[in-house]
Length: 57
Figure (cartoon, rainbow, N blue to C red):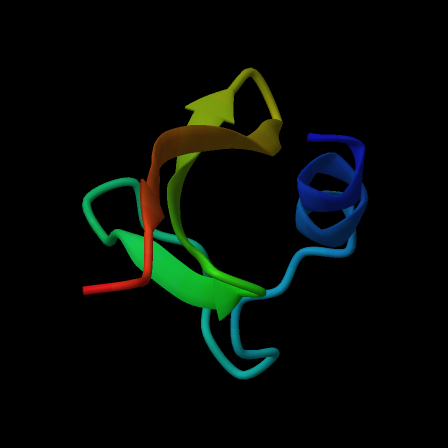
C-alpha cells in the first residue's frame, strides 16, 4: 500500500488535464488495477482511491 500511496502523491494524471471530480483515472501497477478520482476540498484537489483489483484474469 505504501508504493500506491507514493505513486498517487506524484499526481499521476496526464499533466495537460485539469482534475475533474467526475473522471475516474486508472493505471496498472504490477498485478493490480488501481482507480482513483479527484475530490475538491476547500482550495485543493485531493486524490481518493476508489478501487484496487487484481489485473490477472
